[in-house]
Image 1 (cartoon, rainbow, N blue to C red):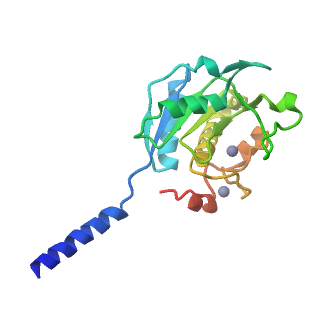
Image 2 (spheres, rainbow, N blue to C red):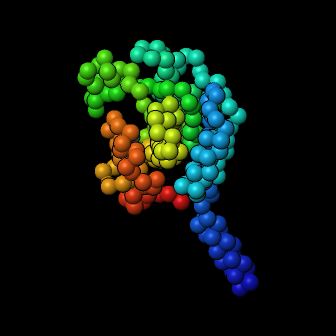
Image 3 (cartoon, helix red, strand yellow):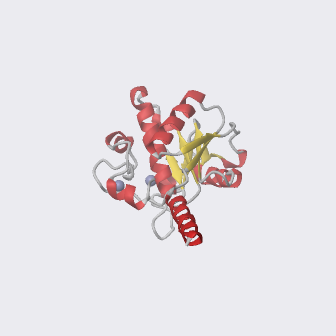
Length: 207
Ligand SMILES: [Zn+2]
Ligand SMILES: [Zn+2]
């Protein structure tokens, strides 16, 4: 009988440990000359917004192969995602790159063709980009600086949005949800909240 009780106790302990969720670990990779205070502010925001453990990596130079000069000097966000994927330690679930340099990517239609006019969308400036779902995302402060009073608010929202894509979230039409499509204007970012709507929160199984 004693043996049975002991076995039950072991099962109970095992079941309890199964309920406990390990905390989500999100890394931040500062690229180039980005201000350390901005990096720390983003780290604090992510720690709170995702109830995550946040690891700030050593700053890293922007990879020269990602540099492009079509309309203006920029870095290809898609190539930065690959760079981040290559260096991401296994102990980190999602790695967010932060840069003060301008970034671009190619804007495509759902069938993979470049959105028209191609001269506009082949090298299209972006605030951020992230895999959906996937291990890495990247955010640039370059296009968020136009209004210093709104800068941090915008930065936090874009970081949350891109990490939301990493968690598998698509763009969301719910009023005020941080996963709304920016629709090519900073005004959308200024309009949305810092948070995911309840549906997005549930879909991302946020801990
Ligand atoms: Zn998006
Ligand atoms: Zn939503």
